[in-house]
Image (cartoon, rainbow, N blue to C red; front, side, top):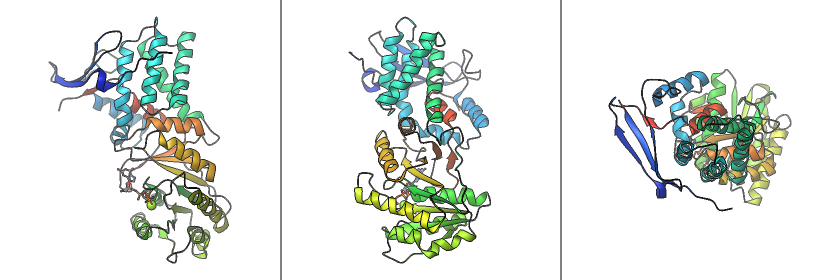
Length: 384
Ligand SMILES: Nc1nc2c(ncn2[C@@H]2O[C@H](COP(=O)(O)OP(=O)(O)OP(=O)(O)O)[C@@H](O)[C@H]2O)c(=O)[nH]1
Ligand SMILES: [Mg+2]
């Protein structure tokens, strides 16, 4: 089937201008086989659902209140790369008509694929919208946008035994144990530190196991996080193997007094067989040192990675059977669309998102806020 590719560099550009209300207006110019169009969305003081459109800041404020998701501004920014590409969705919706919805859905599928959703997940989303059109629930561009968001929320919340709307960790053991895994530089140690801070603040006594014995600076980095979070750090001999460190007595002792044991591990390529085998030993060692399996085995994914995170998740899941994901660096030029694909295809829930480098920059994952951030109703910048 012949497909028409929409891409911003070929088809248009954006411009900012001021309207009579001194509101800065973002307008995107696009071309398509249906002719050139101009999608114009202005920020004002009236509600987004009305013609004038609420200012971006107002809308953000509303979502912050509704979701209490912390610093939504950074979360919003965090989907920037994906959102940049999804800007084309606005253009598509401006052209939406029931008569040629098939064409629009094909283009929508292309846009979703280009925004890192991956072909299978993009197809699934579009199929759900098509079902809505056929059953008469999706008639207009607004309905389509709503169906798009709810398809994404559904994919993010309904898959997997551990799915559901809560991002809380399931911590039942005493102490509960959480194993943190991921590729190099994904943000594992930082996330361990943030988790230690979060649970410490909630009253838990937290013990940190430095399972990264490769990098000389790794234990010191974890020790620094331990100081910040008020957590205790396990000790180890230089050159020790990580599984031995995890299983060692130094780490066993805490079982009596600590509520939560967080195990940091060294970064490893998901394709490095030997290192993945070692990770399996680390997981068994948690069982030996503490009580059975870790309560959670969490994969830390760098949010700027794009669809390659699906391969990473698949390999780590095969090796150590993950229970959830933590998506980091959403404050940067993240490509959040890919995570929808990971959740959809592996049935793993996103537990937390990282939105910065400080101890407090960890937020519970909120699927609805995420979908809202991907598809804001309009593109506008309120005047100062
Ligand atoms: N902006 C931003 N930076 C982050 C976030 N999480 C981690 N980082 C940064 O990413 C870099 C790598 O973080 P680490 O925690 O050391 O990553 P790691 O996975 O432990 O790395 P290795 O142990 O070397 O595999 C550091 O500079 C962190 O400050 C985040 O949510 N936002
Ligand atoms: Mg590390």
